[in-house]
Length: 413
Length: 90
Image (tube, each protein chain N blue to C red):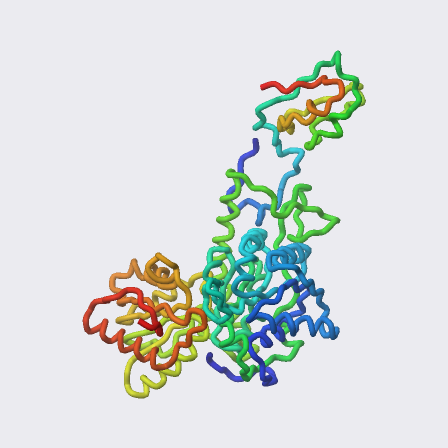
């Protein structure tokens, strides 16, 4: 994170990641929240229901009987023109699976926090990215945060991104289970009115209805319309193509909104898509997502102080995948290690590794690249391990060859 | 059939841009209802049971009419007809 000159007076509050989510949602004038509690997301819904019970927000809170119902309620509320939020994790997100596609397919700009947690079995409540990565093809925008401050900032930006007329897609903001969701940090918070002005009121694209009217895309008895109808082989494909275009447009919109937010808050996370750290002259680099980046930055500082040219590229926005800028950032590095907290079993590494390797394919010269699966089920990744990865990268550069393409960091062999 | 829209022209998210009245859905049926007017008592049971509203009372004719542009050939009308006046034929 880069701190610019503070533009507005901000209050420092001691918040964990979940509380940071709840506060941001409170300030974003959300009309409807439909959610079901699940560890490690629970604090989010606890805080939000407190705000509702205390009359601190003008929000309808729907206690649903499952996450599938929660997302169904979110979609329906969003269809009426409401600003909608939900939060979940792990098995809860998996249970939403079907409705995630319906929500994005209906172009409902719902914002969701995912307190990223491992999937069973064996049962595990701790942090990794398996839950969100399993939903990467659901046409939701995915942002992964490094700390509680970024969580707060990303939720606020999330509503603007989702509701942007060129996007109109739901946004998921990921915070690593426990590492971020339950860890108390100093979070700079904006005044309510500043957030309110920044997010503004929800925008609607205009659509042509069966009555021949051109009206805002929301349910209104005065101008009825059919949402989410059947689309047979002669039309379904066209609507999916529209979603892909919206993702492409989001690659432009996310940095714009990120810049606009930086003007207000004084905080930047790289371009909003990618955050390079000591990368400019780096010979070897790590690419990672989420809270691992905090540990990597500490190690980079230490190794840089010793004169070693190491760097980091943190992927903040994973969907849409910023392939073009990622290639520019990495093409001159000699060796890259991808650190990811999820696994595509039988796929030869994780999804992030595959996509980065794919993005580099057309380059005349490209770095050696190696995948490190790490931190599954909340396994800690410590500075010594990160140093080991940089050592491995130097060995790869010297050997001009990658021995094991997929490695497991911090596992007992 | 009007020219199908491209992905750039179509309303987002599949919002219907034409009425169901102009979107003919009866062209994939296998069976069609055939009525024996000598048996039909015009009790209108079939108009109530038709799930597609494809059987209508035409007051000017003083008779019912099957709209084959919307009839799916499900056969409910034939099944429900108390006079057994409707049979389904290929």
